[in-house]
Length: 156
Image (cartoon, rainbow, N blue to C red; front, side, top):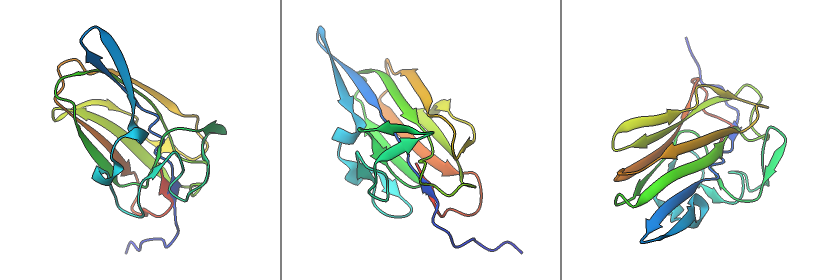
């Protein structure tokens, strides 16, 4: 019989994302951390702007990040792009403060199609780069999932 492990798994979904929007001839970048995070769902706690889910400095694989979003798996956010975005760039990973056995996956979805997936991400791994062409995409979904039954301490 499987029993949930009662530990808090920290995972920093460091979506250091930049959405690039085309505004006539000029290009503008928008940080995910500058968007309304009340639209982001998170199974435990509240997503944090420029901090880990626990309120600490964001660190992935020993690298410190000053900008981004700290959340907990399971987590999702839907962004209406109105077909104006050109690209999505981010670094994602499991926060160094996470439970050492935590394992999560990141997905970027555009108009109900998976545009990018990380595969399993584990504690101590370096951040993974995401660079996606969003030309023509209306809705962008960002999803963080757990690769084990125990969702505690899965901080992205």
